[in-house]
Amino acid sequence: MADGATESSYAGVWARLLVERFAAGEIELATAADFLSDVASLESLWRGAVLTPNLPWFAEEKILQGASAAFLGLTLAGEQGALAWRAVAVGDACLALVRDGELLQSFPWERAEDLGSRPVLLSSAPRNRTRLLEHVRLTGGPCAPGDELFLMTDGLARWFLESYAGGDKPWHILAGIASDSEEQFAPWVAELREAGVMRNDDVTLTALRIP
Image 1 (cartoon, rainbow, N blue to C red):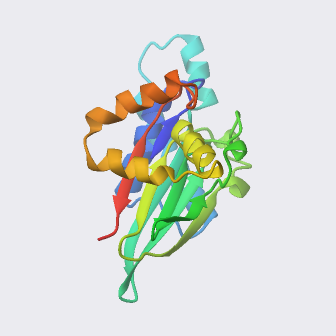
Image 2: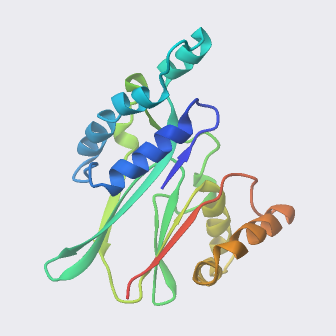
């Protein structure tokens, strides 16, 4: 899952490229350094996609500055006869692991207030990646039957963590929406925005349940 930063140019292209290459298995999660090395190899692909003949000078300058995106990647794989998950995060997306009806882990953020207004994002420009190593978060663990995994961009993640801090179990709502239809998702988000409990920002949800 990738959420392009609106203040950077061609962020949508960069976000899609990150997701496509991660899904194709071309981005390693062994270490933070491995992850950033594979991301760096995508820069030329991004430039090739956005550079066109006769670009105005200001557009070329924007390309030099690079595009940025929050990124959250999840893999599931068999390890020693059992299923295990591994995740990487840069920026303000969030993954929640629910087991036996309780929140087992919230990664990489545990509180809504930790989701700052200016998160460190994954950039296509080398000069913006020099200090990213300490901001690449990796985690993982075994899966159990019935585990639920929710991947959320920042607006939804903030609502989720605020609801949990208030004593609610927001994963019940998300599981219900995910099991119905996508047509219910947008109206539900609109209601929360109108009520002032969710920020007006891009909202994406991916929900998985381990059989």
